Image (spheres, rainbow, N blue to C red):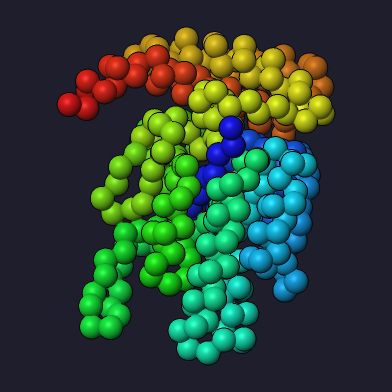
Length: 296
C-alpha cells in the first residue's frame, strides 16, 4: 500500500535529508541545488530538475508515468515550485482566472499523488495562521504548508494520508532539536489518517513507516546498514528504559567497531540516526497505553 505524505516546516530543519534517508532510491523532483544536502549522507539520489520546462503539469505526468519505476517520488521544494507555477499562470491568464488555473493544476497533481502506486512525498515550507478578507467576509486559515491562495493551504493537505509539521523542541528531541508533529494542533494543520505515528516523533520518515508495517528496502549499496541499525537500536532502546539514559557511551563503543570495518563515516552517522529513531519509536510503541493514560 502506498502513502501520500506532506511534510512542511521552516527551512534548513532536515526535511530533505529525512526524505533521502527514507527513500535513497526514490525519484526526487526539485529546483536546482535543493538536494545538495544529500552529500551529508554520502549518497546521490536520482534527481529531475524542476525548472521553466518542468512545472506542476509535467510533475503530474512524471508521477503517473514513473510510479512503477521507483518506490517513491519526492517533490522538494513544492512551495517554490508552486510560486514558479503561479507566475506562469499570471502570464497566460488575467485576474482571478490565473489563480483558478493554478488551483486546477495543483488539484491534478494532488489527485495523481493520491492515486499513485508508489509513495509520494511533498516537502514544503510553512505559513503561519492568518485571516484573509475576500468579498466582504473574513476567513481564518490555520498555519499550513506554504502555497499561494486561501483555499489550497487546507484543500491540498486534506487529501494526504500523513501531514507532518516540523517543530523545534530541544527538550524532548534526542540528537537533533527538530521533531515531526502529527498530533492535533488548533493552530496548524497536521494529521495522520492511518494512525501510524505518535503525536510527535523523531525526524525520520523511514523508521516511522517501518514501524507502521511498510516495507522499505535500501539500495544494494546501502543494504549493509540494516543489520547494524537493528542491533544498535536494541542496545539504545534498553538504555532508554532507564530514568537517566546514557546513550553517548553506547554509540561511542559502536563507533569504534564500525570504523574498524572501514565504513564511510557519513554512513556511520546515518546508521546511528536510524538506530536512535528506531529505539525511540519502539519505546513509545511499547508504552502506548501508558502514554495514553498519562495524557488524561
